[in-house]
Image 1 (cartoon, one colour):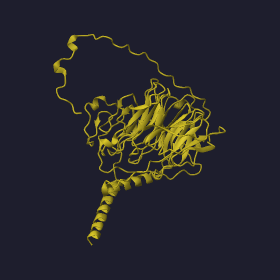
Image 2 (spheres, helix red, strand yellow):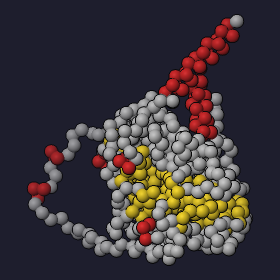
Image 3 (cartoon, one colour):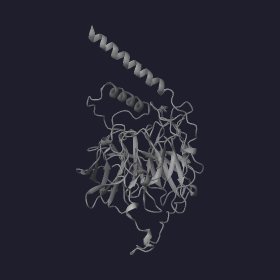
Image 4 (cartoon, helix red, strand yellow):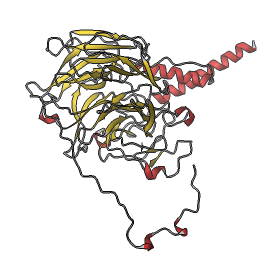
Length: 493
């Protein structure tokens, strides 16, 4: 009898908890600002409104009707390049015009039985959110080759070229007979010759990566010199609430030296970096980053920014350099606010910015899209009203700096009833100069192009004169440091 009573009490407690969670999940914070007001080089950053339960508004994927298309910007058309794919995410264009796409989902979570009933509830909620967003299920773990054999803008050939050795794969790169693939837990190198319709031979592991976690995708970009790989690894958590020990090796971009065979941390404090590309103006690495949640529907905007070596963007303690997140329990490193960087360009709150490419020589997007960056905004799950669910263009000036507000390129994914036809995920250049966009929940690769447009010119690399090194000190000796000029208080480590 006592056992039955305990079971009944546990069920009542569980129902109460679920009822309270459901109450808050169906309400949440409604945005007071438009997405554009929280985008650009000078976004409006409202006062934070910390939430005990996240705002939840999921646009459930319902798919595209036969023949239906996204809405393309004026001067562009959009067609289906490939379809019938199982959750396509990262696209990678090969030098011969073939396109590779990873069919992937998150890795299976390992349940160690620890954490008790609250851990189980969090697991159920996460599974529900994944299911509603169209991301639930086993990972296909495949790389598919897409080839337009007759030049009509449709990939007649869709061939699985690799499945062995893949575990929730994301980023890809190719150079000199080697295909590099980022699994969720390691970077692998496979022998692969252009044009081949299968990958043969055993892979070589180059480096381990922190596995899985809340942000499991691992994008990759090869340096234009061909001797370095850059790998983006997102955090486990929102703001380090699981402890900073589990974040070791995460929330950062790694650099792997292919010649030396070793890696180093390249940039840190990036909650969930995704898209990677090198600026054609400066040659510098840029990335898209998904910022933190549960500070309201207007905070914090995801962003696009450059990534110089040693960059620190402040996560989890800071956002947009000077804004302290008071919810973080871990001690903040000394002087972090002094050396944390301010992101170059805000992309809007909770838009889930993923794929990124800069304008490339040979593009066929027309003069209106000839000098900037294209970004896939996968779409929010925790903003009212929803944000993202589109592909946008960010114009850059002649000095390689972002300007203005995001310009819509592909829209029409969201339906008026709150559902969505699909979710734009990645962007990549096709061999013919068209822009390819993966739509993971719909299983489609879209192709956007400006009809009749001639191949565009490449962006000219900026050249500058280096500053000569200062070889001797000059000036007044009174400007030198004295014993009273040093800090008397030892800062916290």
